[in-house]
Length: 312
Ligand code: DON
Image (cartoon, rainbow, N blue to C red):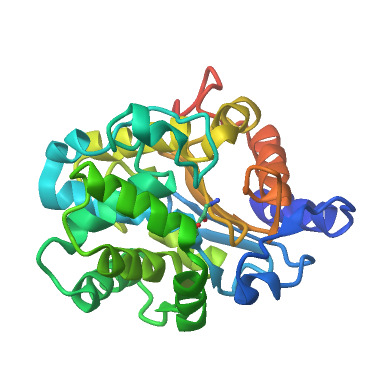
């Protein structure tokens, strides 16, 4: 057995025995029904090898991990102009917080909190219909993962729509500042569909290759190396909300979490990693996902803060 396969199998076995698994998101039924016992991990290396353990082939709701793909598309559409409407500083607040928006004139701190991702979605929607913007996202992640079976869980999108009062408040509040241009309902409908993308760890790790490989996805240039580096920087500083400092301290990799319990983490030049365990910590990040990544980094030395990181 390859040593990486062995490490992943060990981690999956260790996670099976964990007692404190966090709490599954319960604000919508389709997420509340996911068994807390699930655990999967996938690693795609720079050489193109895929290593899997646990429930790595099972699709789950990627939720806020979609904010990384939305940011990538929005930077492609409007370039650095995007940063006039959304910042790139950690918020130190919860993912769905509204408190900073008043003092900061409707400009969200970063594209990975809900408010920021709603602005990014508004940019992507532009003058299109939601159906077109949702189709663009679906084609994008399918192309990234090289897998046309990726879909959107309509039940999740619908449930979000029925219960998304906070997101509606955020969007309306930003619209009052002139930072949302589209119809709030259309922008949110699109945002909820992005969140409802269903992907497995394997598909997600494959989709993250462009961030690992300086903007190349499966050898093809998708974005510039500089843009990939910058997206990784925002993931490192803001990818885990008010838990981002702790994630950098413990894991030391750019990462993005979602309330479905997934985390996409990037070891630049080395590997794209996806992990899934639906139980969340109080900040809404996967409890075991973080522990599994911490153990993976300890055993492989893949933190970007390792002195020899990425050396030949
Ligand atoms: O907008 C929401 O609240 C959810 N659809 C997504 C939130 C999320 O994944 C935050 N992540 N940890």
